[in-house]
Image 1 (tube, rainbow, N blue to C red):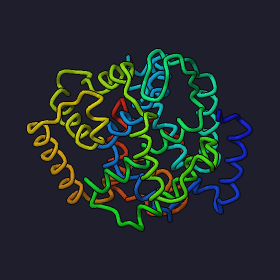
Image 2 (image 1 turned 90 degrees about the vertical axis):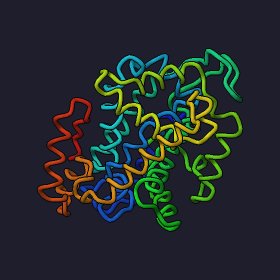
Image 3 (image 1 turned 60 degrees about the vertical axis):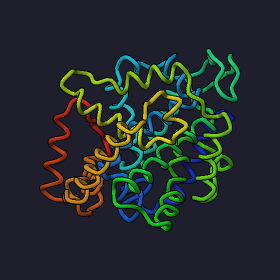
Image 4 (image 1 turned 180 degrees about the vertical axis):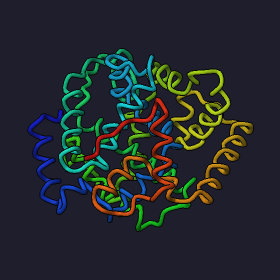
Length: 317
């Protein structure tokens, strides 16, 4: 199924009917979504989520055919998170505007696969607004947040995972994904992810490998050591089959690097004040709804991140 504009508007109406305070946006300060998604530890899983998305042949081919990401990954990072943060932490108008903007961009993206990939024949038509592919992209983000918090952020209870997954259904609606594509509970969601990894829906192509290599290549020699550690974390967090298909080596040395890097990140997360781990978009949202935004420390982090060229400037209302 291809998500049309009318499908999107119907799903946005579903969200609007559930929202009690439009200033708080799609979720709001009392949701687990805001608490987990504001945590900067999630960026340790950015490579994992990106590669899982690229492992879907429709996604990789669309990016290869229509995006500058292989040549300019920094710009794609900014644009992606401008929209993601606007949807997550924006007021309802900003969230819906971002959803409509993304849908409009996707509506212009389509083509055919240039190689056979898993269950997909060469020449299969793809579209960026394909509902099944859209849900796979959403699934990689949901799954990665949970994996990162389990492995690096102190862990989540079974109840937390269920609650986070149920809240995530509003995020699927922001892309117009029909309810029929969305597993009913977290156990079914985990079965869905395992199934897509095993049934040929997800299959790494040459285009995916080339884009992944560009994403994980340091932009300057000075960043090479940090990128080596990031590659190790990314490889260690990926499912084994996807890691293998992307060509990551993961022998004894790589496993040691991963354990060392993951241990260091987990330790740093434990001792860093929670207020210093909040994404700037969350601080803006918290101030908008009159909640604690983390105070001076969180604002100092916001200012520091704003000075980085790659960090998105997010209007959240």
